[in-house]
Length: 219
Image 1: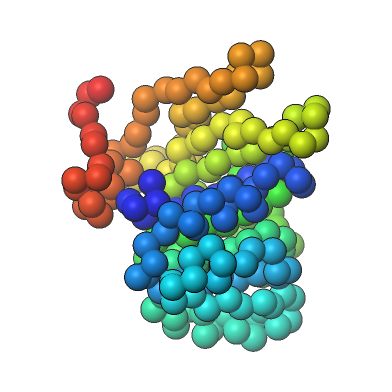
Image 2 (image 1 turned 60 degrees about the vertical axis):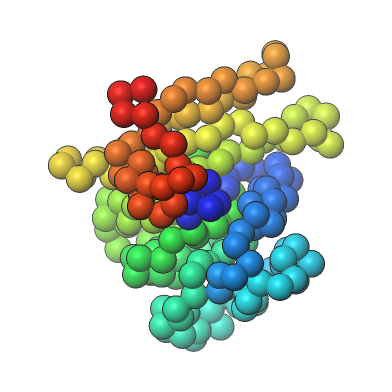
Protein backbone atom coordinates (compact mmCIF):
# COMPACT_ATOMS: atom_id res chain seq x y z
CA UNK A 1 0.00 0.00 0.00
CA UNK A 2 2.89 2.36 0.70
CA UNK A 3 4.45 1.68 -2.71
CA UNK A 4 1.11 2.29 -4.42
CA UNK A 5 0.84 5.69 -2.78
CA UNK A 6 -2.54 5.39 -1.09
CA UNK A 7 -3.39 8.09 1.46
CA UNK A 8 -4.03 6.69 4.93
CA UNK A 9 -5.67 8.01 8.11
CA UNK A 10 -4.68 6.21 11.31
CA UNK A 11 -7.37 6.55 13.98
CA UNK A 12 -8.06 5.41 17.54
CA UNK A 13 -8.20 6.62 21.13
CA UNK A 14 -5.16 7.87 23.02
CA UNK A 15 -2.39 5.29 23.56
CA UNK A 16 -3.85 2.87 21.03
CA UNK A 17 -0.71 2.66 18.88
CA UNK A 18 -1.52 5.23 16.18
CA UNK A 19 1.83 6.99 16.18
CA UNK A 20 3.77 3.72 16.25
CA UNK A 21 1.85 2.47 13.22
CA UNK A 22 2.38 5.75 11.37
CA UNK A 23 6.11 5.40 12.00
CA UNK A 24 5.96 1.82 10.69
CA UNK A 25 4.23 2.93 7.48
CA UNK A 26 6.77 5.69 6.98
CA UNK A 27 9.69 3.28 7.41
CA UNK A 28 8.56 1.61 4.15
CA UNK A 29 8.41 4.87 2.19
CA UNK A 30 10.61 5.47 -0.85
CA UNK A 31 13.66 7.37 0.46
CA UNK A 32 14.08 9.19 -2.85
CA UNK A 33 10.77 11.03 -2.44
CA UNK A 34 10.56 14.47 -0.87
CA UNK A 35 8.25 14.80 2.12
CA UNK A 36 6.95 17.31 4.63
CA UNK A 37 6.08 16.29 8.17
CA UNK A 38 3.82 18.72 10.02
CA UNK A 39 3.48 18.29 13.79
CA UNK A 40 1.90 20.28 16.59
CA UNK A 41 3.99 18.30 19.11
CA UNK A 42 7.20 16.43 18.20
CA UNK A 43 6.62 12.67 18.45
CA UNK A 44 8.36 10.90 15.56
CA UNK A 45 12.11 10.99 14.84
CA UNK A 46 12.07 10.59 11.07
CA UNK A 47 15.80 11.19 10.79
CA UNK A 48 16.26 7.88 12.61
CA UNK A 49 13.59 5.95 10.66
CA UNK A 50 14.72 6.95 7.16
CA UNK A 51 17.93 8.95 7.56
CA UNK A 52 18.58 9.40 3.82
CA UNK A 53 15.12 10.70 2.91
CA UNK A 54 14.73 14.42 2.05
CA UNK A 55 12.06 15.33 4.59
CA UNK A 56 11.35 18.73 6.10
CA UNK A 57 9.93 18.52 9.63
CA UNK A 58 7.78 21.51 10.60
CA UNK A 59 6.62 22.14 14.16
CA UNK A 60 3.72 24.61 14.31
CA UNK A 61 0.24 25.05 15.74
CA UNK A 62 -2.57 27.57 16.14
CA UNK A 63 -1.65 31.03 14.79
CA UNK A 64 1.86 29.98 13.75
CA UNK A 65 0.39 27.20 11.60
CA UNK A 66 -1.90 29.69 9.85
CA UNK A 67 1.11 31.81 8.86
CA UNK A 68 2.86 28.94 7.05
CA UNK A 69 -0.17 27.35 5.35
CA UNK A 70 0.42 29.30 2.11
CA UNK A 71 4.03 28.09 2.01
CA UNK A 72 2.91 24.48 2.52
CA UNK A 73 0.38 24.80 -0.30
CA UNK A 74 3.12 26.01 -2.64
CA UNK A 75 5.34 23.10 -1.73
CA UNK A 76 6.01 20.50 -4.44
CA UNK A 77 6.73 17.73 -1.92
CA UNK A 78 5.68 14.21 -2.89
CA UNK A 79 3.80 13.59 0.35
CA UNK A 80 2.70 15.08 3.66
CA UNK A 81 2.66 13.53 7.12
CA UNK A 82 0.43 15.02 9.81
CA UNK A 83 1.13 13.48 13.21
CA UNK A 84 -1.70 13.99 15.71
CA UNK A 85 -4.01 16.34 13.84
CA UNK A 86 -5.60 18.02 16.85
CA UNK A 87 -7.48 21.03 15.51
CA UNK A 88 -9.43 22.38 12.58
CA UNK A 89 -6.63 24.56 11.26
CA UNK A 90 -4.28 21.58 10.92
CA UNK A 91 -6.97 19.40 9.35
CA UNK A 92 -8.00 22.12 6.89
CA UNK A 93 -4.35 22.46 5.85
CA UNK A 94 -4.18 18.72 5.12
CA UNK A 95 -7.37 18.77 3.02
CA UNK A 96 -6.21 21.80 1.06
CA UNK A 97 -2.91 20.09 0.27
CA UNK A 98 -4.79 16.92 -0.75
CA UNK A 99 -7.02 18.97 -3.07
CA UNK A 100 -3.86 19.91 -5.04
CA UNK A 101 -3.49 16.25 -5.95
CA UNK A 102 -0.87 15.34 -3.35
CA UNK A 103 -0.96 11.60 -2.65
CA UNK A 104 0.70 9.41 -0.01
CA UNK A 105 -0.83 11.47 2.82
CA UNK A 106 -0.43 9.99 6.30
CA UNK A 107 -2.38 11.33 9.27
CA UNK A 108 -3.20 10.30 12.83
CA UNK A 109 -6.47 11.44 14.40
CA UNK A 110 -8.19 10.79 17.72
CA UNK A 111 -11.34 8.89 16.75
CA UNK A 112 -13.41 6.19 18.48
CA UNK A 113 -15.65 5.36 15.52
CA UNK A 114 -13.87 5.31 12.13
CA UNK A 115 -17.23 5.36 10.32
CA UNK A 116 -17.60 8.95 11.58
CA UNK A 117 -14.13 10.02 10.45
CA UNK A 118 -15.05 12.43 7.60
CA UNK A 119 -17.77 14.11 9.66
CA UNK A 120 -15.62 14.44 12.77
CA UNK A 121 -12.86 16.00 10.67
CA UNK A 122 -15.45 18.37 9.18
CA UNK A 123 -16.76 19.28 12.64
CA UNK A 124 -13.26 20.26 13.82
CA UNK A 125 -12.68 22.39 10.73
CA UNK A 126 -16.04 24.15 11.09
CA UNK A 127 -15.27 25.02 14.72
CA UNK A 128 -12.06 26.74 13.62
CA UNK A 129 -12.79 27.95 10.10
CA UNK A 130 -16.53 27.73 9.49
CA UNK A 131 -18.01 26.09 6.37
CA UNK A 132 -20.54 23.52 5.22
CA UNK A 133 -20.57 20.13 6.98
CA UNK A 134 -21.44 17.96 3.97
CA UNK A 135 -19.00 19.69 1.65
CA UNK A 136 -16.07 19.43 4.06
CA UNK A 137 -16.91 15.82 4.95
CA UNK A 138 -16.80 14.90 1.26
CA UNK A 139 -13.45 16.68 0.93
CA UNK A 140 -12.15 14.58 3.84
CA UNK A 141 -13.45 11.36 2.27
CA UNK A 142 -11.87 12.24 -1.07
CA UNK A 143 -8.53 13.05 0.56
CA UNK A 144 -7.93 9.61 2.12
CA UNK A 145 -8.17 6.14 0.63
CA UNK A 146 -8.03 3.97 3.76
CA UNK A 147 -8.60 4.25 7.50
CA UNK A 148 -6.62 2.03 9.89
CA UNK A 149 -8.33 1.94 13.30
CA UNK A 150 -6.49 0.88 16.48
CA UNK A 151 -7.55 -0.03 20.02
CA UNK A 152 -5.90 -0.70 23.36
CA UNK A 153 -6.82 -4.02 25.01
CA UNK A 154 -7.62 -4.57 28.70
CA UNK A 155 -3.96 -5.38 29.16
CA UNK A 156 -2.87 -1.81 28.41
CA UNK A 157 0.46 -2.98 27.07
CA UNK A 158 -1.38 -4.68 24.20
CA UNK A 159 -2.57 -2.77 21.11
CA UNK A 160 -4.46 -4.16 18.15
CA UNK A 161 -5.48 -3.13 14.67
CA UNK A 162 -9.27 -3.24 15.06
CA UNK A 163 -10.16 -2.63 11.45
CA UNK A 164 -9.26 -1.36 8.01
CA UNK A 165 -11.81 0.68 6.06
CA UNK A 166 -11.87 1.73 2.43
CA UNK A 167 -13.32 5.21 1.87
CA UNK A 168 -14.41 7.11 -1.24
CA UNK A 169 -17.13 9.40 -2.57
CA UNK A 170 -19.56 7.97 -5.11
CA UNK A 171 -19.25 10.28 -8.12
CA UNK A 172 -22.84 9.74 -9.24
CA UNK A 173 -24.61 10.25 -5.91
CA UNK A 174 -22.05 12.32 -3.99
CA UNK A 175 -22.51 9.92 -1.06
CA UNK A 176 -19.58 9.05 1.22
CA UNK A 177 -18.91 5.30 1.10
CA UNK A 178 -16.97 3.56 3.89
CA UNK A 179 -16.53 -0.21 3.72
CA UNK A 180 -14.80 -2.34 6.34
CA UNK A 181 -12.40 -4.79 4.70
CA UNK A 182 -10.63 -6.11 7.82
CA UNK A 183 -12.02 -6.75 11.32
CA UNK A 184 -10.32 -7.91 14.51
CA UNK A 185 -11.80 -10.97 16.26
CA UNK A 186 -11.27 -10.45 20.00
CA UNK A 187 -11.97 -14.09 20.96
CA UNK A 188 -9.64 -15.62 18.38
CA UNK A 189 -7.09 -12.77 18.58
CA UNK A 190 -7.06 -12.88 14.80
CA UNK A 191 -8.35 -10.89 11.84
CA UNK A 192 -11.16 -11.51 9.35
CA UNK A 193 -10.84 -10.17 5.82
CA UNK A 194 -13.31 -9.24 3.11
CA UNK A 195 -12.16 -8.89 -0.48
CA UNK A 196 -13.43 -5.49 -1.54
CA UNK A 197 -11.82 -2.70 -3.54
CA UNK A 198 -13.52 0.15 -5.35
CA UNK A 199 -12.76 0.83 -9.00
CA UNK A 200 -11.07 4.16 -8.27
CA UNK A 201 -8.66 2.51 -5.83
CA UNK A 202 -7.93 -0.24 -8.34
CA UNK A 203 -7.27 2.20 -11.16
CA UNK A 204 -5.07 4.37 -8.94
CA UNK A 205 -3.08 1.31 -7.90
CA UNK A 206 -2.57 0.04 -11.43
CA UNK A 207 -1.68 3.49 -12.69
CA UNK A 208 0.99 3.93 -10.03
CA UNK A 209 2.83 0.61 -10.16
CA UNK A 210 1.08 -2.00 -12.28
CA UNK A 211 3.50 -4.82 -11.44
CA UNK A 212 2.96 -4.34 -7.68
CA UNK A 213 -0.83 -4.11 -7.85
CA UNK A 214 -2.88 -7.27 -8.37
CA UNK A 215 -6.55 -6.75 -9.25
CA UNK A 216 -8.96 -9.44 -10.34
CA UNK A 217 -12.16 -7.92 -11.78
CA UNK A 218 -15.23 -9.63 -10.38
CA UNK A 219 -13.15 -11.43 -7.74
